[in-house]
Image (cartoon, rainbow, N blue to C red; front, side, top):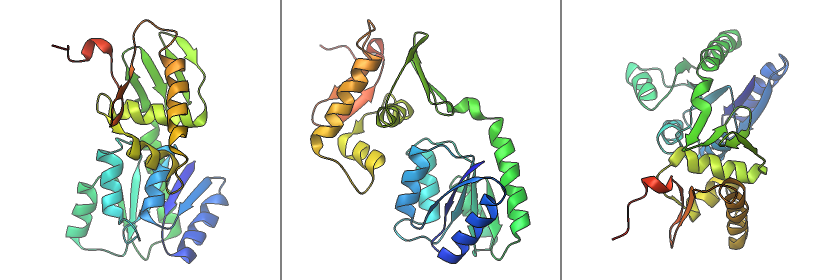
Length: 231
């Protein structure tokens, strides 16, 4: 399994990472909500282990944004000292799949994570995104249009996934830059270059354009026959 652990207690995060790595899992860690959300959006994980009390962005807001804003499907286990019924209800209302109160048994955590991963494996088809005849498989990282395979760089793939999850909504340049590069945005022209290469890959060989520039705002992915007609 590939797991993401978002926990600001470094000792606990290290203990969890060591425990799951010893069982052959691949682990990524983040100690704040903003970094954690960025990792969860741009990567593919089997399960997210999420603390609630985080600097930058708390776990409830992170989970909400992961579900509603990024449209990201990912099993989430909330790990927290908040143990009231209202706390649990809020966790589930914000998109959590399971809830474990500290202190906890590592073995119980392991069993819950494995159960979430098995449950998630049955829903992986939700990770195949479509826009017209364009298809993106989040799990296998394969992209095709009209049955023709398309090769993309890592950044181009991330941009396309974001656009497809939001389609037909517009994604602003600022938001796209923040989600792809986080706190280390490149020069403004870098995004334009990636968009140019992506457009050449997914549109140029085909009759219909899917990737559209919204001047002064950003970009969107939408079939031309679904666009409003100009008066």
